[in-house]
Length: 337
Image 1: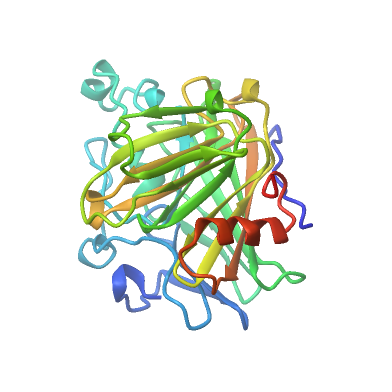
Image 2 (image 1 turned 90 degrees about the vertical axis):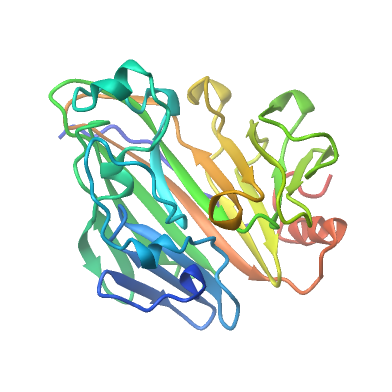
């Protein structure tokens, strides 16, 4: 069994948008099984992850091509570049600890995300065949600066290791978590191991039966279903093991992370969150999200969190029972109940 890794440290101090050329900001990691593309634009964002000969597993918006140079100000809104992004949480606090947009502060705005983390270009620190590293902009909104490292696992050619470091750039303490957000296509079927129904909270839930939302035998299973437009909601989940998985077409993505006690996660969030908008943003998306522990950082302190992505071939069709049996064969905890 592959062991997940995520640590929290206190340190003092391709088809992209269905057709994307490869501009200078984009770099790739490749082996005989996977291709990963990362752009230094838009906060340093993963724009594709796919197996050889397969389509992009990630959902990427047309704005990657149509708005390649976003303006970054305290008034900037969100732009649906999608792909894989990193935020800080909790969402309710995004605009509460800044003075450069007093209107958003007074409104206790929980949208848009921090423009400096999500829109500003990042700086390449390393850009070679073995590893990609980027440092994002220092944000006057959240007081954070993110550094991201991605590498193909030399021992597991189907696996990517992602590590993110967040640093407090202010001269006063800040409190945040690191929040991984992986956007995939809305017809992806996602599995999350869960102990009881009380460990699942749903906000903005669609009517029962739409989408395909099932909790049984220690597993939450969620998919938008065949409707071209429809359900929208968010599932907050306390998982029983440090993984979740999504099946789409002939690929399955397994995201591993270190399981955290509920007390380590900000009470407004959950360690795993699934956001489904089946017919909205960029023709629909499903977000596979993971929160790291909520932590107070003194000036100059850092915290780290990590995910491990394994992208495997799947030829078993659109059958939830067969997909769960496949996850059981990967020796994933709780998959075999």
